[in-house]
Length: 121
Image 1 (tube, rainbow, N blue to C red):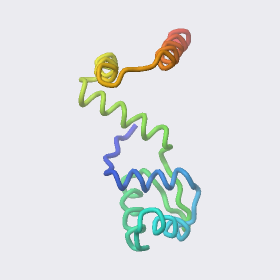
Image 2: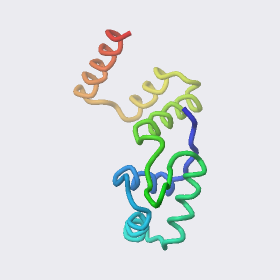
Image 3: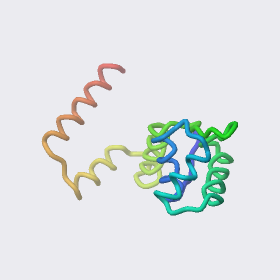
């Protein structure tokens, strides 16, 4: 999957679209005015940039994503692990747990996920 470099505001904008898609561009501008305090031209400028990046499309005034929220954040997580932990998921988990800790419920859920993936593969 293609990697998308987005700033915090662009991610928030994409989240708004994922929450409401498909959405008319005029309605999107109204939501952005309310939630982000943007003027209409700002909304259209950011929309155009994210369309150029291949994340969104604006066809006949209807805005939709070309990449799902799940796929976007999965790729972002993979990139963080690659960049910060040399691609090592165990190193990431060890770092995360050492600072934050996890509950027994979270540990059980993670173990179920691991068992599920082992059974599939």
